[in-house]
Amino acid sequence: MDPFIHYAMAAAHMAMEDAGLVIDAELAPKAGVTWEAARGFPRSSVPPDVLEGGPRKISPFFIPMLISNLAPGHNRDAVRRQGPNIATSTACAASSHATGEGMHAIRSGVCDVVIAAARVHITPLGLAGSAP
Image (cartoon, rainbow, N blue to C red; front, side, top):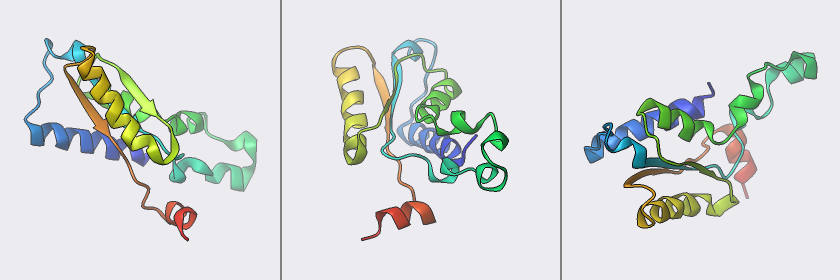
């Protein structure tokens, strides 16, 4: 599991704890998660296997580490949410879209509660790519 998933799970757990939110069997079917995925995942973007041994040395877990909906998916499973699992990937607007999708799911009655998350890459690669 890529570190971004661990961070996402910890953040969702802390947010639920801060809000006093407990997802029980009654709430689970209408509890969803939206996640912003504006960029790829720098720690997994260039696996060492490719640099050292070529494409045939890539781990079979490489692609699953890159899929942007793994963070909401693991979060959804961890607290047994059964509602929507949405990952937005719309560049700099992805955080706003994730929050808006969560709001839309609640307003439309699809969900009673949504955990909407945004993330930031504070890594050497992420900072280098964003530098002026």
